[in-house]
Image 1 (cartoon, rainbow, N blue to C red):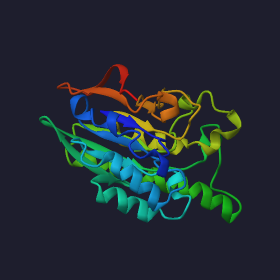
Image 2 (image 1 turned 45 degrees about the vertical axis):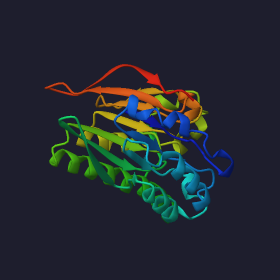
Image 3 (image 1 turned 90 degrees about the vertical axis):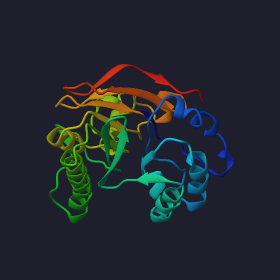
Image 4 (image 1 turned 180 degrees about the horizontal axis):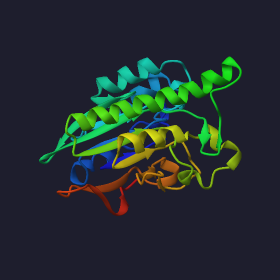
Length: 253
């Protein structure tokens, strides 16, 4: 599996990632895009992204990020990517046959709120309640999508978000902005529904490796963190339980 987020493409980036992405059929079964695919969330920028990932020879599954919402054209951004064959997820799952197994990806953008012991509560002013409710609803949607993948018999389930589910992968970011980089509610949803891997972006100064309290491996694939066109992860499909094996390899930039 290949994954990257926060590629922030604009009109001057045409062809930048395409040579690396064209190697994907040799090393990966799917490409996951963890949001912030554009700079300002315009359809014109999304068209650049679409051409980078069109007809790669592997499925491409994405969630949008906060940058992809900035111009209030997120629906057009999603349509543009979908026209290029990308499955853009928000509260739903994608099911992909890989060999003899079915791999499921559940995706939401997620939102802010903070982490256990240092998080915002759904209390007080309407503005505060709406802020936290946005995070809760995203987490609920992720849990339902993961549950649906399990009901469909997916051998492996991957949670794909833009915002971080754990603080582990934020190490390196200023602690003052942790509440704006993710929410513990996402991790709770993953632990309750079950997931074999969580992939996110957003934290450019963070670190790659983390884990939820329930033991789900978490990977921050923001491009400034992985410092390559994409990261590769090997989810071994053993008869009992899938395991994330080895250290991640990286695609050539």
